[in-house]
Image: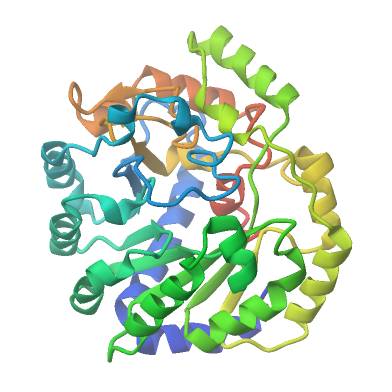
Length: 390
């Protein structure tokens, strides 16, 4: 939602306040540009892709919240139907050490997620190991446990936090649980009081409950001192799209999926209210970047009724850029749907799996078509080669 001209002072401010993060951002953009060029110029080498630029580690599926709409632990969430011991499992520390011994010298970006990643019993050791390798690390967290690791945020300049809040206090707590908003805001306030404050972004998922209060939410977050705001559409798909996905995975990969069912939910956002809030946000000059996948209210209508029209020429470049690892130590090309497994780190090195038969077959498919559940996926926007969105 910012023009290139208006971005310049924001980037300068970022370089002064978080120089390590600013350098990492520049390096990421250069690396991505090179990788997109490689993808275009090597259409027949999908089994010989250079090492991942990003590693996403799901440290555990365990979570201390039960947010409405969550595809893992919400009312329709798939984790609710799995054995309790499996959902409490953590990513094996031996695998983590082995993985970073191989990948760390290349300084990939790392994303830590869950469940709630701050529940990981060896989080501080992991953060120290990533700092040792100078890997820019983003922790995707609900923010309620940030006070546990305040010292890390002060001493580790490679650690950044992307915190989920879903609107002002009343709206957020209706979706994510009572008392959550005040706790998270206080944790962020404490982190931002430091001389070298941690980079903190806010991810707000657009829901019927908060779509009419986006502008006031952005003002509250800017006043809090956060560094970025992302207005993120709720990811869902229809029962028909789910059945088409099931057929494709069964026919091409011999897999019967189950985890995708957490995304089969109703979603109807008020486009008129969204348009009004979008206009209010755009009418104001902000000291930080406020991003969104939708440029116009009409995009929201398309997202709900015909999402493929928004991303018709977009492909999942993520499969050439980022590798995802589950708490079981399995490599799942799409962590949101971990039914399709490319291999296990207990049996093979990550780079062997990265260029194995499953990845090669999936990349070959994705060069020509998206899967039935891909059209609303945030990775089509996040790893958009044309950078049309974020």
